[in-house]
Length: 248
Ligand SMILES: [Zn+2]
View 1 (cartoon, rainbow, N blue to C red):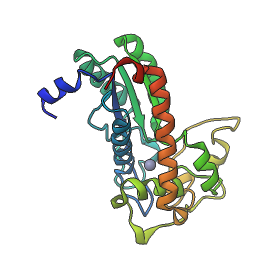
View 2 (cartoon, rainbow, N blue to C red):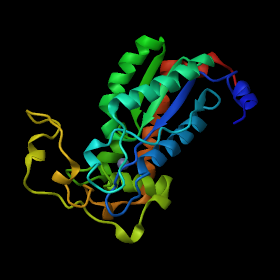
View 3 (tube, rainbow, N blue to C red):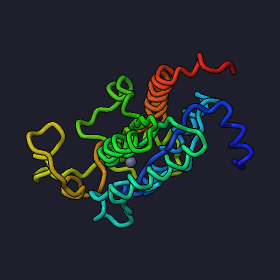
């Protein structure tokens, strides 16, 4: 957009959507920009649903991916770098009168940092910040279509989302099941266990993915993405009272 176009959009805009992804290995069958591209595509769909109340910023296309660094190509930010970057983005947009933000994040490894960043920046910049994991709220579609007990990275869920939103991310002839390590301390450190701790991804899976990407389909992706968009846009409409504030 030009600054004139932004100026005009700001007449009705109530909040900014900041898509946040990662640049990290996604197994043998997806490219490293996967999370950044999926976050951006979801942000555009969400922005269309909430027109003319939302403006979408450029995508933060790297995230906290230390646990993938032993696979070629991964580029990771330090958590403190991501917090600094978000501080500058939010601070700049505040100059233009935007005080409410949705950080639309597609990468699980960013969630802890976003929790800390939202706590710090809400107070420091005197703004409202919310963050959402892109498709985590699509509980019905995920429960009815995902069968692997361990999923969440380049699995049937994520590959299905990509089949729906950005099939160019996928090497369709390379689709593989996660090559999971049966032994190892990663099993002791999973969420929900007594102890939590950092482990590298190759301790859990030889080929860098989990779940079973061969079970992915565009229909599953459509169900998951659209249910998540329904949930996120409903919550935002309630939170920001979007329908009642402005008559379109
Ligand atoms: Zn991913």
